Structures are given as C-alpha cells and as structure tokens.
Amino acid sequence: MPLAFTTDPAHGGRWTSLRDGDREWLWHRPDPARHGVVPGDAFVDAGGLEECVPTVRGTPDHGDAWSRPWARDGDTERVDCDAFTLARTARATADGVEADYTLRADPGYRFVWAAHALLDLSERAELRARTGVSTRIFPEASALLDTPWPDGAAWVEGDWPAPGGLRLDRFGPEDGTAVGAVLADRRVCVHDGSHRLALAVEADGQPVSVALWRNLGGFPAAAPYRSIGVEPMLGRTFDLAEAGPGDAACVPGSGEVRWRLTLTAGCRCP
Image 1: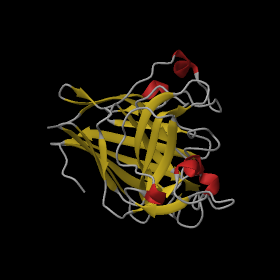
Image 2 (image 1 turned 45 degrees about the horizontal axis):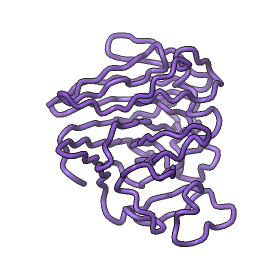
Image 3 (image 1 turned 90 degrees about the vertical axis):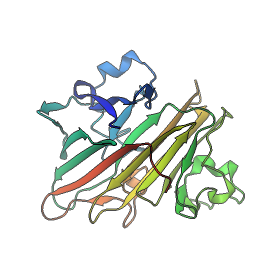
Image 4 (image 1 turned 180 degrees about the horizontal axis):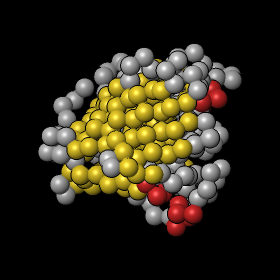
C-alpha cells in the first residue's frame, strides 16, 4: 500500500511524517529552537527525515539545506543555497514513496547527500542488509571493536553485520553507545515486529551507500537520548572534508546530478 508522507518546506524541507496505515515510521523530538534556525546554526535535532547536503558531519553542521526555507511549486520543492540548488519531487507509488532529486551546481562541485531518516523503532528492531557488504565504521566506535583503532584513521572497514566485531544489525535497549557506519550498498530493509520498511537510493555514475546512526543513549554527552538513523546517501562518508576519491558525489559537465530515493512498505529482505 502507499506510504502517506508530509514535508515542511518552510522549515528546511524536513519530512515530518512517513505513515504506513497506523504505523508512523519517523521518530520525533520536539524542539522549539528548530523553527528559528538560520544558515550557520548548529543542528537542532527535531527528528523526521532531514535533507543533509553538502555534508552530514563537519561544516556546515548537517549541511546547508536543513536551516533554510524551501519553495514549493506544484509537486516540486526547492532550496537555493550558496553553492547549489536542490530540487525534490516526491510522489506516492503503489507500495511506497519515490522522491526524485536534482542538484545543480558548477561542474566539479563535490558533495555528500543523506536522507537523514530518524526512525521510531522498538528495541527488537533489526536492520537487514546483504551479509558481507563492506561497511565503514568511525572513531566513536573505537572502544567497541576487537582490534585497536589505527592512528589517524578517519574510518576502518569490515563486513556487515559485524564490522570489527561490532554487531550493528540489532538495535536493542539503551547501553550508552553511539556509533555511525556506512554500508557500501544501495538498499537496506528495517524489520520491526510485523512491520517492514525498505530504503534505497539510485544514482547513475555517483557513489551510493546507506548510513546507519545507532545512538543508544550515547549522544549528546550532556543530555543523551535514543535515536536511530537509517540514511540512504550519495557518497560514502559522513564528512565531506574526509572524502577521498570516490567518496563524494561530483557534479559533471552538465551542471546537474539526479538521483532517486525509494521508500517501500512491506519489503522483502536484501
């Protein structure tokens, strides 16, 4: 069945609802500061699905699009940033939602994009992906691995579902940890009881992946809470400043990059 969705162009283009019948998939954390942000502000985590571009971590914090008002013209929503314009057209399909994106910028412009979807998941939920798919994990996980962290490494790689010996496919209760990972694949499926949600991204000629943010009460340090992000991406790292060759999307000579985000209810496992 189609997924019902709602976006909020006036407040950064955030997806505020993704509903499968009575099941709301998006997690929320109301924060009145979210409505008053301006470009350059630190990220205000209100949940939902944020459009993070041209980076997730780093500068600007969670990108340059979430803090700006978007314009809507029919079914298309658009945001103009200093270095690029991003347009999104989302529509219901027979079994979910498809969103087509176009980013326009000068040829050679590099960026990372993530559909930063924070999901409302139980402690029994699982993330299904292809066994053995290459998975990057980042320094916040260093104390949880079965080998020492290499000096100066921005990430290390291992095989899903337990890169470096750290099992990541189960979410579970709060344990005071918060780790990020990036899977070198275009599609994953979330299982939570009888509910299923597949998330996928397609982009010709660009690196695609799916990021995981598994925060089980380990972030932020001053007032931690539980939040789970499953994030289709262009690029293969959270911070554009750390992207090596092939780790970021790059605008070709045409001046635009196009891609598609697909969200599907009742998915089959990868």
